[in-house]
Image (tube, rainbow, N blue to C red; front, side):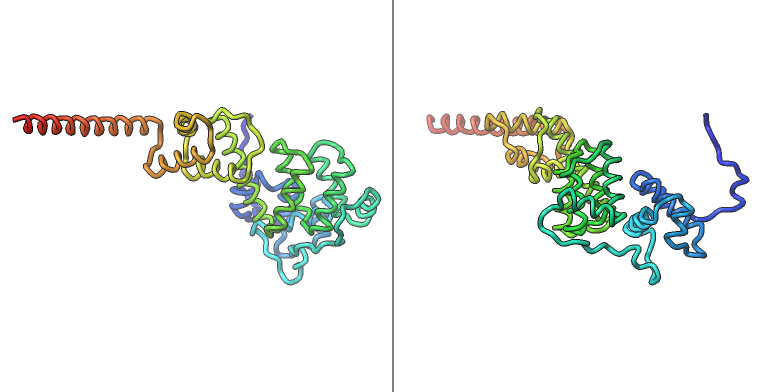
Length: 305
């Protein structure tokens, strides 16, 4: 059944930035949208977290997390009165070792954000957390100082891409901390890049007839360059693989890369372009060879005279 908007509802309207619908419908969660809509509707009174939470049926931490999301996306800007809403959290506890079960229970009891982190992770992964998983999540928050919203973005990505393992979540989070990725916008760009790299690696594996495995960083980089930057098709990738094996009797990633680089520089887009070039090269070689042979015969005949 199709629906149309009742024209009567347009008697009272308020403005929502187009970027919200254009860029954030898939990424933003339901509570993010609810918080933003309430703020947009009540901009004249600048509601506080408690008021938004009561109106949207959310906890105050969920409101704060939503505010951090929209601030990181550049939709909201903190004013002087509410600067704490967009402030990146400093680590609550500095420790080298991961917390044990008792420490996790204690931190969950005293910090609403940790309770939210553990509960949301269970929901996203669709299962109960093991003790080592809860310990790692608390460690990422307390020891590494990574904000809950960023940890949950990694968890969501892991669940959506068939990697619901705490090892992947921990390694990704640690990498982000080391590289200074600490805002929603930066995390969003990084996750998009990761998704594109994984997709590119899948294309390369299928084109080369390889069993899909965990790629090295260099293999991911090359795969993304071939498919995204150079726009090489599956057919071109397969042709490069075959050319590599024909030349050196084995598969070599670096050798394939040189072949593709050469084709890219020459502007080849399809295997037909390569075959056409081969025909032209063969024709030129044959013409040159025939010319040399004719000249050689004339020289011989001249000397015989």
